[in-house]
Length: 241
Image (cartoon, helix red, strand yellow):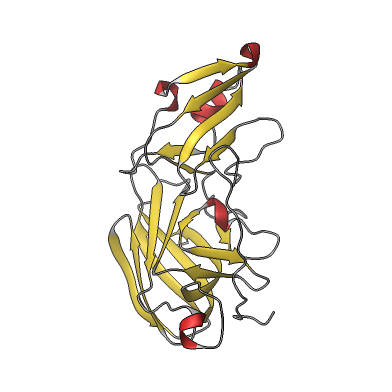
């Protein structure tokens, strides 16, 4: 696969609410299993009895549709298997945000390719499958949620773009609703911008791609994905460092 190439869409099947279709957090010493529906919203969390504090204060957070933090200790829970396990039911558009990006450390990067790939844990909308060279955006909007582990008021971000599909792509980026970037991306380049940290350290990044187009519409292809930019990495750091 050449850098910036595309492949015919793989018709994968996302597992139902009764199955885990995305590992939000993995730790061999703890259970927490996050069950999501097809839209990526949390419906149930399963833990072992005695590990409630890890769920309440662990390295991931739950937010509602207004991006407010949810106090999991207030969520209705059910004890099962003779008290060995506990599960929590969630209602509404609840998202789980995984461990924060550690600014200035090796884990300050969202990877869209290689064995370090972790983008599926952060992207909730508009990202295609991982390929050898990176991942395409899929649709007119990409939405990524992540936490940052700093109180710094201003944060820098750099997105490494490997390609723009078919023609130059107009790109607008919003962070927590505020526009931070608007340019035309023509090919391989870095998208760089700064944004204000939030009081909760929860960051919602929205990338608008009005010129994204499906290969099936512009060439001899049955690929119906709506492709915009080919992404490789996104790195965050404190401004001035």
